Amino acid sequence: MAIAQQLPQTSRRRHEGHLDRGAAAVEMALVLPLLLLVLFGLVDFGRLYNAQMQITQAAREAVRVMALGGTTTDATSRVTAATGGLNTPLPSTAFGIHSGTVASCTAGDTISNVSARVSYSFTFITPLGPIARFFGANTLPHVGTVKTLSSDGVMRCAG
Image (cartoon, rainbow, N blue to C red; front, side, top):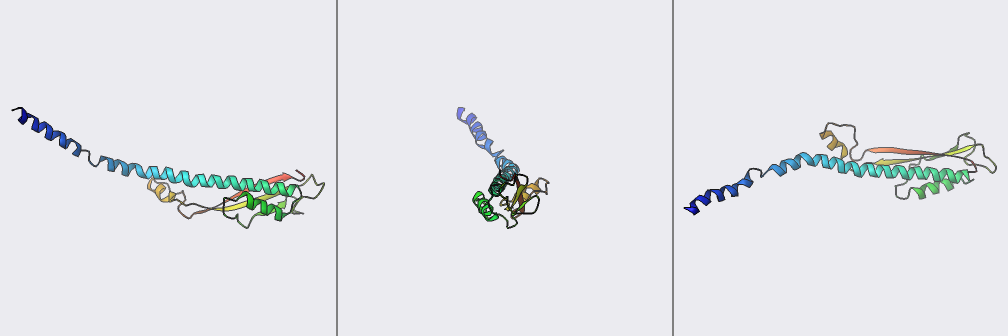
């Protein structure tokens, strides 16, 4: 009689796991889009922030060279060196003096300011937009979206 009473309990224990068999799959299906959104956002916006820091440094380097009497060729080569991890900055890299008369400082000029603008085309690489649309947002970029980043540097002549 003891064996007959244990059989229903053993049978019940075997079938307890069947009730929540698909719960993990459903939970994963609900959470996965949110996890992907966070992951892709970290990747693309981390890259974007790094690119912005590099072109800001490049603009600083360009005006420093020009404020100390360098040429636009020197400044352009300094920009290329400062943005080494990025693709080539846009050719619209513009150098000039705010007074608009010369392209770099002359000896003894301490009144004028030299300025430089460095631009860069940043391309998003993750499908952030389509996943954000899943949550109702439609303003985030998708793969291949290009955003132009730019930074201005200004320095007084002769440093």
